Image 1: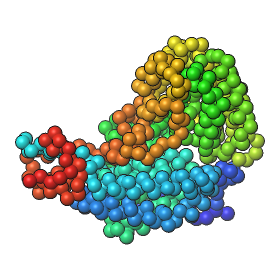
Image 2 (image 1 turned 60 degrees about the vertical axis):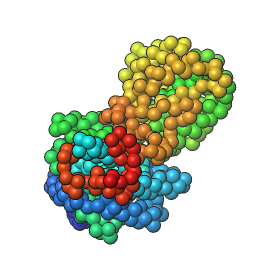
Image 3 (image 1 turned 120 degrees about the vertical axis):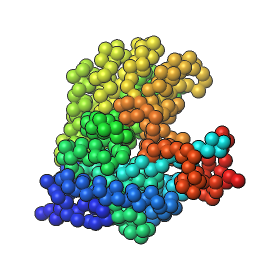
Image 4 (image 1 turned 90 degrees about the horizontal axis):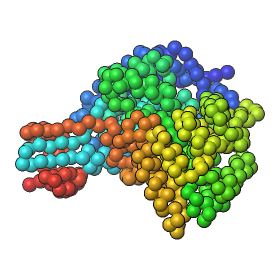
Length: 527
């Protein structure tokens, strides 16, 4: 027996959806649907949400940035007070461990992101205010308008469409957000939405600031992203669905910031193996199997040279993959997709050293998987061998020499990250120089002697990369202030009277924002 279908949040009201169907999330640990139903919204829900968001944006444009900061801080406080309930629901929907993953890693990160976004909203330095006093021209970034955020399945807190990084960035800039929940964790998103709605009311924000729908048809999703009332889209998810939505947004000139796919290549140079082989085996396996490999920065492709140390590395990794417990995947669709990707790699000629099939039982799980190809095989068909196997699977590429390895790097698509391991005494330096120049052009973040799995919430972080890692190589989903710029437009004020300009461009700079004034950075006021 299921509960009544859950309500959507539109224009500050929880109400029944004009649904065309219903769905239930699955507990991946049990492989069984949860006893709760969510609506598949028809266009009328989207239409009403767009109208409410447009109205909210009109009001936001005249509100002080302090009000936005207070909302974000209030929301973070409400989340923190409800963290135990959120952790329980997210655990049921995702199978992710309550501790340390949800309670001790994702929850603090989510709260930190919201509070950093509040600080950025209050300070306004993110808007890059620029002043030319002689020409009487001033410019800054301003809110772009209503934003729709599509959240991923693998981070129910930190990247949630109604609480994660994209949400925080869009709100901090001054944009209303229409959140499209991920179908893997709609109950988690709904609980966040209850808290967001409470924060809206308690801080006096416009009713359409935060809205939530759970699922639409493909046709209505495409209609949503192309609607003129929507100004930008933040998307994290599968490449196929993302590219379809992006093509629709591109046709109408809509900014579409998408994180799509990444195998995150890791290169092991010979000196590193000679120096610390056992340590590197352990370091890789820990990273590769963390969260059952379901990180967008999971190191899914390893490149190395053919020698005895490499053989020992492969044997060590395979043995540890065999000995490790098989983790739970996020959903049945992730399980199906992983098995399909492994089959594609096998059919193309990859040697299956371990795993490759679904684990028996109802749990969403695939055996820990290790595949191997030669550098020659990779160069013969680089496209198919860059198929992303999202989950607990790795492809080992063994190259005959450094020239072949460098050629393989040249054939890589864009990725979020690229890592190079080398020895500490300098014997790998020449090879490093050869590899790093090419690899850096193909990734958003280059790492040395470090696995890419962790993504620090740092102003210097780039969680982006060339296509198909993301839809645009110049933007990041993590790292303030850079992540905020995605949801902003640059506005120039030419000979506009001072009192008519944004506060951050006026002579008095009481917020202390850093501004570029006549070519020099300053956080003071103008005389």
